[in-house]
Image (cartoon, rainbow, N blue to C red; front, top):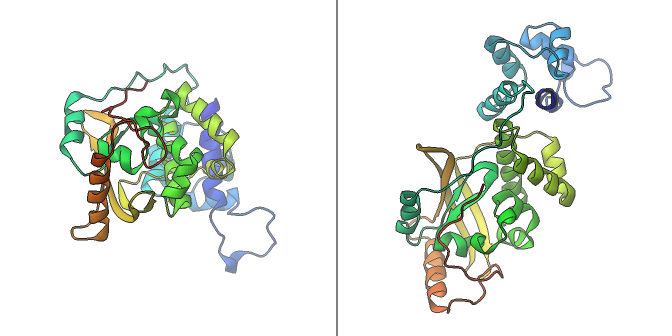
Length: 297
């Protein structure tokens, strides 16, 4: 039943963000967004039926009805997929916790082969499962963290160093929360995800606000603007590559354009690390680590 409620909350949040046509609004509105009857009309369903969907009752809509609702709510591809994830997990039956994730040796070899290209492996809940040397130098030394802290969203939301590193921290952090929201929709019975969401909600007002919006995103590429403590400003392109044999794992790489100052900065970071003895502080203020990967449940 809890997941049925989440399905309804998602529809309600998506409805609230839509603005009514000013030419058809005659009365002042007390709440933002469209009314239920307006969405129902756009979706060509009855108001009573759409109301039951938002209330999490009798959720057995056909795929054609869901497609109509998605169009009425102007859902993106990622949001439509999330809606289906929530619906498919509305049964209320007990769900076994997901199995522990492991990074296969060939994936670790791939990380090492990338050399001066920073890379991390992300798993469920945006857990950081592995990172190569440059990934740890660029972002954070995840292997040196306590097991429960090795999570990308947790790090970016709660670590003060992350706020300094990302020049557009709000954008990067909101994207991470949106990715976590999508994962929770796929794995509603994951107790570690529930614990993570609870911890972030307690410790971050930004997280509470973003989580309440039910924003979903699955960005596979983009550009990040960073300010690194050792080499200064960087502008890096990231690509998130899904692993076909490990569909819940992805490799995220960070590259600089050829001949750019950012490419020179990455080379400088690599050489800086090589000139420092093991055990000294990493750029983010955490102990340097030579660990090649992390295994998380």
